[in-house]
Amino acid sequence: MQRARAWLDGDGRMWLRRFVIGVLVAALLILLAFLGAAFLPRWWAHRIAHQVNGAMTTGIILGLFYGFVFTIVPLFTAFRAFQKRRPWKVWAGLAVLSIVLAGPNLLTLGIVIGSGKAAHAGERTLDVDAPGFRGASLAGAIVALLTILAVEYLLVSRRWSKRKLHEAKHPG
Image 1 (spheres, rainbow, N blue to C red):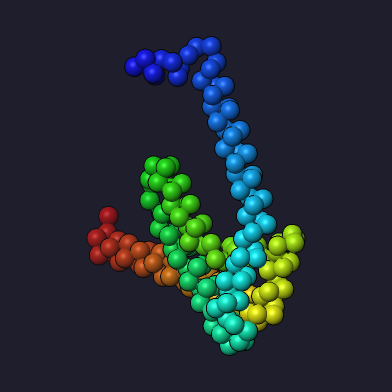
Image 2: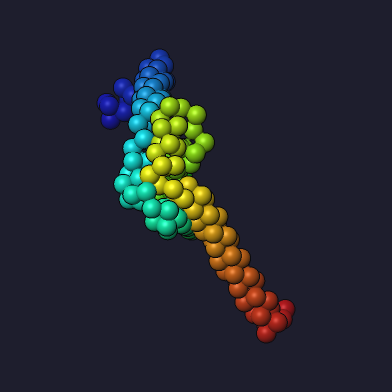
């Protein structure tokens, strides 16, 4: 109880403490973003290049796989998470989970649209050692998006048809 009273002082210490913690968290996130931008594109490009090993067919197959799987799983998670009313903490956790599951596609996207030196180095690595990966990854992501939209359409139309059938059988 004393701890709660100390935290909820009337003289503004609570807000000062929250402000300082917020600034520290923001600074840590910015530092991690800069470190990630300098390291992750090169690292990811080398992981993919090691898997593909310069073969166009392997690059296309792996690109389709990564693009499809790491788009459909996060989208499915996100659609299912936000269909029901849940506490905001659950929604936030599922949103973070969806972003983590989309990580490989986000790393590839960072290489493709990135403007830093690491992104350019990753782009060159993928061009030479993983040909076909980037385009196939985009194609896999588009197919996954269309698949998830088709499944959602089928589920919604099925619910609509069931409701119409029930209304026809039990009028009024």
